[in-house]
Amino acid sequence: MKKIGIIGAGQLGQMLGFAGRKMGLDFVFLDPSDDPPAAVIGPVLKYPFDSEQGLAELANSTDIITYEFENVPVAAIERISPAIDVYPPAKALQYAQDRMAEKKLFESLEIPVPGFRPIDSPEQLRQAASEIGLPIVLKTRRLGYDGKGQVVVREAAEIDAACATLGGKDLIAEQWVPFEREISAIGARSVSGEIVHYPLTGNVHDNGILHESRAPADAAEFEGTAQSYLTALLEHLDYVGVLTLELFVTGNGLLANEFAPRVHNSGHWTIEGANTSQFENHLRAILDLRLGDVGMRGAAGMLNLIGTIPDNPEAIAAASGSIHDYGKTPRSGRKLGHITVVADSAADRDAKLRRLAKLLPC
Ligand code: AMP
Image (cartoon, rainbow, N blue to C red; front, side):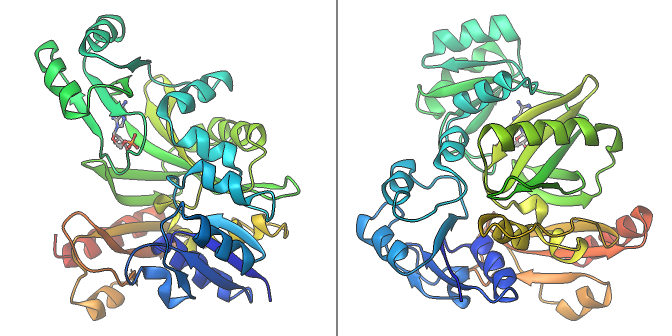
């Protein structure tokens, strides 16, 4: 039985584990936190993500290594990768960890992006504001997630305070995009180079955190373009695993926001809504198995459970919602679980989502 090592034992690791168990796989995780969600799947080596000893133990006890979040130190991956296969490749992590490098990569692949500038001082931000215009979204280049590490600058008077809030340097200024919708393109590429694309997913964020997803997205006209961008990234990075590209839909077409070198929250609907989930396809890709069929089982929707887990699971099940509770301690703003629905039509799916939303605490 193959053993998969996963760096990170959060909910993504847990869902990879649930999918992998059905494939006869065993798992070992590396995570410094107490009682992480994936502990229900297999042993967790309790070390920091860059611990030499922890990584060596993980490599010694598994056949192949993957990771569930993009802030794994690249040096740690490079240290173990000569001895054991680690997917996705470190190159993908490098780009995903630095918003400047990521934007330049998009440009080099002719994937359109909002205007951007590197920022290391308020003077540079003033210059950027005069060149690309206000509003501007000022973001930390590294370690931002779920809207953390970013500030919208609407007026010149806010420039100094915005820079100070984010630490003054290693920032990126991005043109604020008045998007119509946000979508994600999720695909997988195997060791042998086989590629599959899930139908586009439409996403709604609140305060930078994903709240709901619907697939297929109401964006059929962009399917081909988004898939060509995703394919360009997968091939350029010699990528292995699931990759998610987040895009803004604007009046002038698509603009890329960022990519995640991993399974993604906007793809959770694939567990019930697709013939093969993103989690199974990530594992198939890294094990170089034929990728599974990404066809849909109906119109799918997903609601994130943020901050609280509902105490009326029977009512949610009665409303056709499949509840996934990650087993995390509730905390404000924390992703604790999600609910999926699958329906015969988009209208039916939307009606189910509306009914479910009324049953949720917030
Ligand atoms: P990010 O951490 O870059 O994925 O940003 C989180 C969310 O903030 C996105 O999903 C958008 O809703 C919003 N956002 C980020 N960048 C921009 C931008 N340049 N223009 C408008 N909204 C943005």
